[in-house]
Length: 285
Image 1 (cartoon, one colour):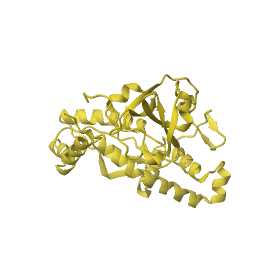
Image 2 (tube, rainbow, N blue to C red):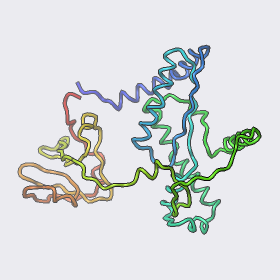
Image 3 (cartoon, rainbow, N blue to C red):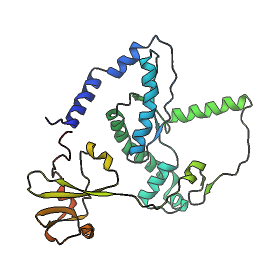
Image 4 (spheres, rainbow, N blue to C red):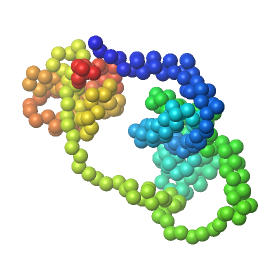
């Protein structure tokens, strides 16, 4: 029996949503002792990656555990929509090289582009959050570019000032001359390095085509039991070659990985591979 994981996922998510399971967990524990949780807002500067999944899972574990213990844990989602990551993404899209490009373009127009860029990615982050079952209130989030949020921060700073707790000091910190801003030690420590990584090539059997395979490369073979798709660049050129008794489909520029004689029988663009299906690598999944 073959399990259709995407179908099961949709059914479970629909059940949770239709039956308001998250809301019921809050209602059930409303009279219990409070456990305070602040969602450090995730930066919405690009499509969500693996790191976004990891951080949200970590932030879900403790509130979920405390809820199971009977604590009332209010969970308000936060969106970080300010800062250098957002600006760098927009600068890249506009092909800006320096801050002078921003000034020439116009500060107000640049800020508008930053907001538009964030709004483009918000639905993707919301979708990811729901799919990984990070139970948090996304209907009433706090968003850092909202005026109410910014005014609240200014109010907090004033309270600190009024109590004499705000002071000026000087400190040597890493600085980026291109961005014109200070950098955290964490950012500087994570510099780019070129490394050699072990990898493997695999043959994914194409459905309905005898002895035909997608030639796939990966550096993470331990993830293969959970594999559900193969990525292809729509603009790249791919080829179907005959090598011995087999037909292999791979990127044309990677033909040098074949260690035996072959003959190109077809040339196609990546977009033409869309919809092509392959047999599961493991019959027990």
